[in-house]
Length: 175
Image (cartoon, one colour):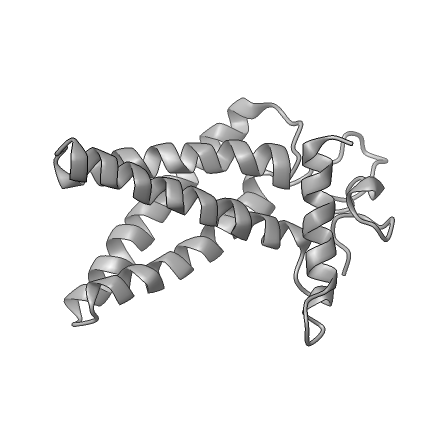
């Protein structure tokens, strides 16, 4: 069994075990997104530490460089492991570049800086902006960047994916 399929099955198994009926409303791709983007956020912070803390790269350049590298890694991992897309990468990469640009301006700079300007402590501002950022990026990836398109006019609707992706045998949208 391939690693991407194992990852998909692991995410589905964890989601099925969520308490309070959350397994019925939380898609496995959301859990996969959280895992991948938590790891890439760690990469972002590590790169920021290396670039600014060790190599003394100016902070604005270090933040931007670490952000771009981490989001590039997020794209590759989410595309291959989480959303398991086989669509041409060019269009997806272009859509992703637009999404991370909007994300950077609206949430990293806008919400984070805006909350800090309103007197919210800057760590808390960044955490709140990060929550908004995560919801935006998941939505952009699931419904815009990696959305499934029917291959022919008679094929299944977007969201009704390969039955192998979910243990129930249903499509990716198991609701």
